[in-house]
Image 1 (cartoon, rainbow, N blue to C red):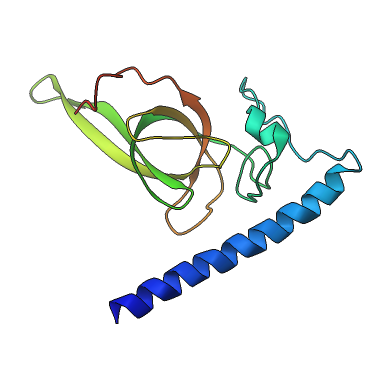
Image 2: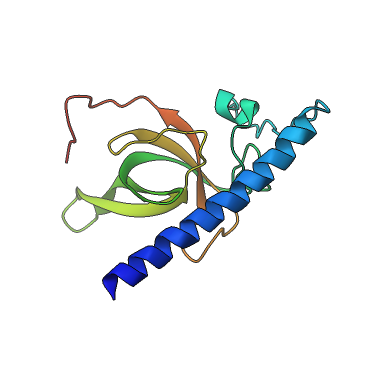
Length: 156
């Protein structure tokens, strides 16, 4: 049973990739007409060179797709990259406890869409921006890949 389920998942992924390749071929034909489909999202952020080259199709990408960034801009550390085009970003913050006149550490894990123009690994720091709901849990999009401050290893 497990083998059949695994085979179905790979076939679905292959079909998705085939559709994506067909869309890409159509876009490449459109590029012969010198039509570029990327934009500057503003907020003082540069459009990545991968997005300008347009080597991928992603309708949920803020640079090449139909997503506008509005609301919060947050910076956090990537915790997980196991999902397809989705990463989990951990945001650490301090919460004031008035009774004890001290701060306590808290964190939130934020799922966000990661466009293929970014090569993100666990431990990297990213800047994410709020957008409309993309799926049941995803309301943020990766805008910039910041330098990894802790290159020696994952810091907890």
